[in-house]
Length: 97
Ligand SMILES: [Zn+2]
Image (cartoon, helix red, strand yellow):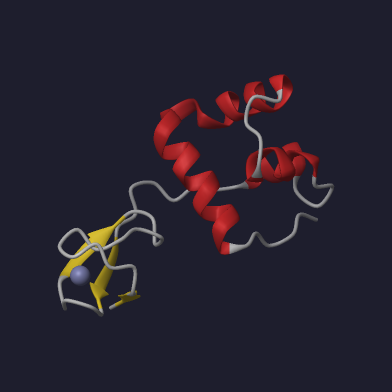
């Protein structure tokens, strides 16, 4: 069994998928083989509860836009990755709406 991923692990995988397109899993396997993606991605490779098998079963969310609102200036907008900042005021105090 593979474990549940954390939100940041999912975001990292989804961002990788968005960047590398259709064959992102093959790209990531190559990157793992070459150890060319350090950090979270490599840690997932080395995690016995995820690893290559977890990757096969993982379904990336593509181009998923999240509706958010900035709590600092009130602007409503959409982001792909929840960690984005407000495009109007640059604020980081953003909530899903
Ligand atoms: Zn704002």
